Length: 142
Image 1 (tube, helix red, strand yellow):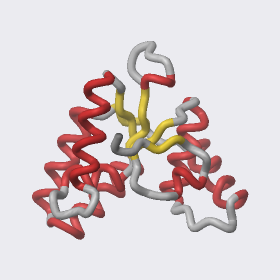
Image 2 (cartoon, helix red, strand yellow):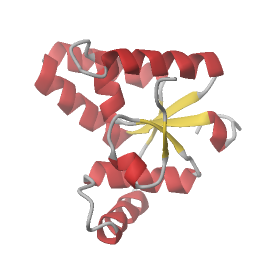
Image 3 (tube, one colour):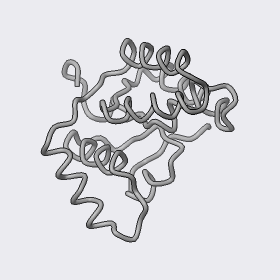
C-alpha cells in the first residue's frame, strides 16, 4: 500500500466491480459508477491484487473483446494500487477455501480475503456476494 494511509482509507476492488465499471452493458454499471464517485468524493484509495487484475482481464475479454480488456488493464495499472500476491497469500487463500468448504468462493476470492486480512482491510467494492459471506463490509449505492 502506498504511503502511510491507514487501512480505513483503503477499499479493496474486486473483478466484479471492475467489470461493472468498465462495461456499460453490465447490469450493475450505474451502481459501479455511483460507488466510484463516492470513493472519489471521500478521498478513499483503491487497491486490488494482481490476481484480480488477471481475472478482470479474462472477464472483460470474454464479454467485450481484447481491445476493451487491454484498455481496462491500462486503466487499472494507472489508477489502482496493485498488491502482488505471494506464496503466503496463496496458501492463506487455500486455507480459507478449506475453512469455508460450504461456500463456493473462487481461489481468487479467497486470495483477496487473505490479502485483505493481512492488510487489515474491511471494506470492498464488489458485486460478488462472497465478500459479504466472508464478513467484509461491501459498499452499496447510498
